Length: 421
Image (cartoon, rainbow, N blue to C red; front, side, top):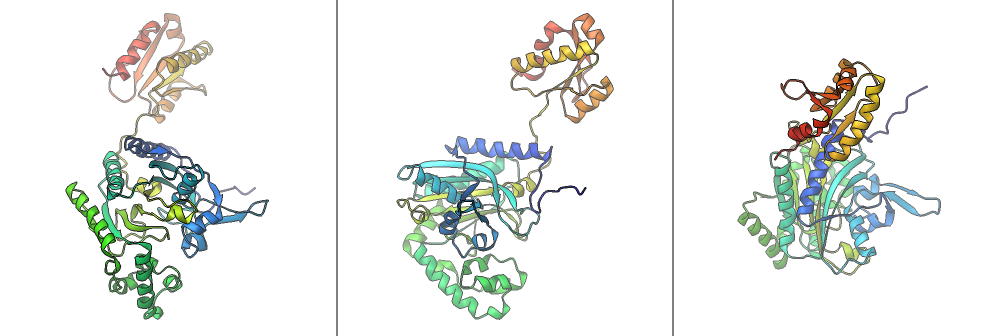
């Protein structure tokens, strides 16, 4: 019988990678909490109309990539391709518009596209959204939040690229200028860009096709279409970044493929030559709430691709030990006693990882399992220990000698090993 394998673009995440994934995710959540953001859990299934109205019907996501289908009642639903629209929908639905609130979320998202390194059909994002704040200070807070995350993960800081898309009216004028420009060279464009000329011409600027780069560099610049208010907002952001000594580059070709963005947009880029070089993207989307039927409210946010982030997190990043104590026992009475011991220690030391051998074997075999579990110490219980009412302690992560202690002194020994004053 043929083996059943995972679907194309759907990845399993096994230990120890799953531990690194969880550690990074928890670190991002912790830092977001310290900035005043709180977790929101969003449904995986949403109405297809939510993303048609927010992302835009002419985007690649809606046109080609959404996992959309009809349920048994004939409703068009889809597996969420991104999180911002869902956050906005939840804010409207639960009456939060009109107040200032900050969210973070983390989880799987789905897009039916060609799988490649750093891009999968089921992928994971960590996202942050801020509603009800229009001043440029919130834009800076989001950028500084990212900066703190890179420092906490001990990675070389990515390059911060920023741009302004202006208001929606200014963006429409720029869009028409791009249509006029690229239409002159339609025979030189690849198929994707030809399709985008009249539907989403800003996405042509994001093309990684090397044959088109000179043409793209010579295309009209959005800054020429920005008016006083938009320019002043963009200047204010740059001044605050400079005052806080946060390096950045203005990238006039930085665009968002989603219709709801306006004014400031930014990306953190690790490799400009790679098609998947960006690990974080965000910006303002002040009209999204209104597009979805709510009262107009300013908003901004960003999303981090966790698979891409994990690709650049140093393998030497110290992940907290999952197994501090491994309990090995040989003999029926010792095995029985080991279960009671594990129960007692877990109650006494709830923050320690305590793993119990559950498959018999010699002490030699059990020590191999303890080593594979990356345990710091092994508690050995055999007939000799039972007769003497004692427990042997073997260190696996250092050269300290094995020692045997009376059972009544075990808790004191564990405290001296793991609980630093």
